[in-house]
Length: 129
Image 1 (cartoon, helix red, strand yellow):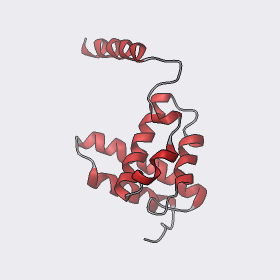
Image 2: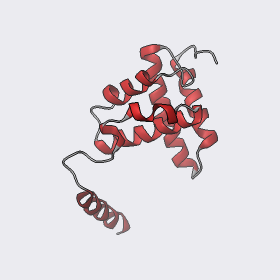
Image 3: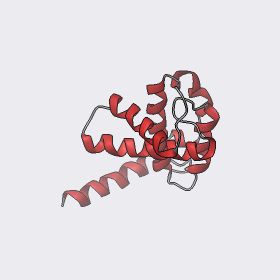
Image 4: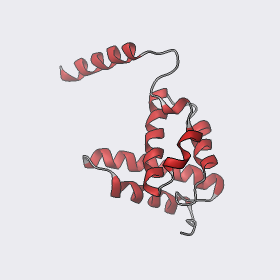
């Protein structure tokens, strides 16, 4: 495949890759596709390559630098989206060992699962009122 001509085309390719492979509610698929489009745009603006031309260094750069100001949970969501795009292109299996980083877990190192569960249960109680 040839590289996309602009960031918008790269975003469309990434969203199309996910739309075909994601099960679930349309709103969840839409959010995931939008996130994939943001990743594809960011990588295209830096290197002018689309999802089919991505190399491990492109993905790692995005996860390391473009998501560094996000919370651990948001970085993890971006990691899951990138993982799905890479699975759709058939690159994930080979690249997985080189893509480990702080984004591959939903917690900061100083957090623990118990604290996350307590926060989540408080949030659910507020919503259900």
